[in-house]
Image 1 (cartoon, rainbow, N blue to C red):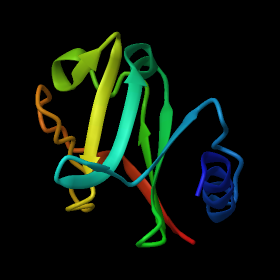
Image 2: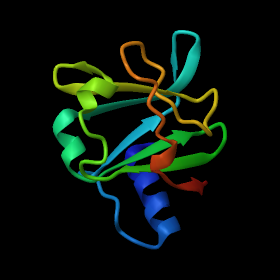
Image 3: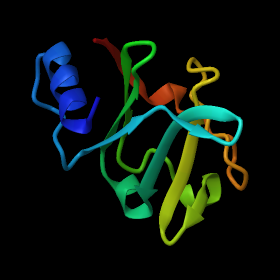
Image 4: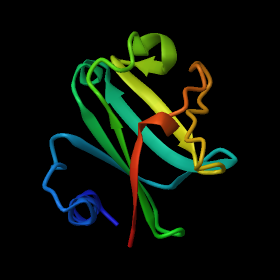
Length: 121
């Protein structure tokens, strides 16, 4: 699965053209140390605008659609590990219901409240 395919599936499922290449980030499940999950790298400036995320699990055949509304996360630099002005986030797939950033240096922020929809493929 790639970003374009995921955007197409999500837009068709929602019957809209809301998501596009510029307002959406995409991540497949990858291995990290002793875990599997999704990497999100969000420039701090992006927290000032609506940003969509499609995180895909090929094994589960599901795409989770997350949206962080503009200015919804205030002071993101205090919530996430930041490197070169980018929030470095790893959401563990071990418990996809919680959708928690597990990286050291972060606040264990839960993205569950940002879950908009789940699209099966």
